[in-house]
Length: 361
Ligand SMILES: *Cc1c(COP(=O)(O)O)cnc(C)c1O
Image (cartoon, rainbow, N blue to C red):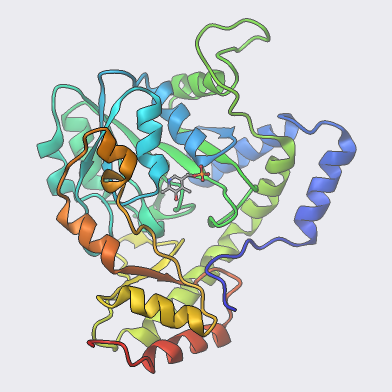
């Protein structure tokens, strides 16, 4: 079986966790502080605040920017449910704009028509590891005085003109095991604003800076030193992991590009795509997924139901028609691209798809 995702963990992570366990300080401590410092340096931001999931990072980032009841936040419906839900947690309303058919990211040309007097923020999602069109989106945010929060949960190290995602606005990263690097569960907020970082730290810990003095409503979103110790090791390997993903993606495209009926991923000029997923488009998507499963090749569909079409969102009254998003949700399929995939695996995948009789049936 070639799995669609596989966390890369070895003796270094085991040793780092053992050290923490032996130290006796297992909740938030020195390792978390070190991980935050290293991650801020990695993304090129002044501050990083560690939390216990990517969802928590989005939630705390929104709250730290003061977003809440009565506000609207424009984002993509072609994302994991947490992108929309984190906005709902604050009492604000997610407003969905359609995406580009080639990058699957928010189409900047369609954002302005969604802006109302209630709009407070835009959350571009760097889906699959390809950066959203941040230059255009940043201009829109500046013109309309909107907050920019990036859903960077799939895009550790992705960049536009060498500027890393998570440094254009406030970044929200995830370190779930299937992501480009992991801490088991975990997340990180990145920002150049001291005020946002300070508020995020308070929100992470029951609204307090000083123990047992609570100045605002907060939560327990803290990361443990056990997780941070894994994160420090993984961050050190991220460059190598990313190169492996890029290499695997290039080999997959080389093998699949010529097959009629398949659209391979693109990399926009000036962008670094970190291939959290290698996602192709194909009309016969479900049949291909079944066929590959039958011969031991794992695939993933991210995402089969857009957020605005989820039962809970229908209950909330969402009834948008987002044609590019909806078509993508029927046609995308992701193939194994993670650093555990070998060249032999890639040859197996390419041969299997090349020999498949199900195209244009
Ligand atoms: C993984 C993911 C999240 C949520 O991260 P968790 O760590 O699972 O809470 C949010 N948005 C996107 C796009 C993701 O891929």
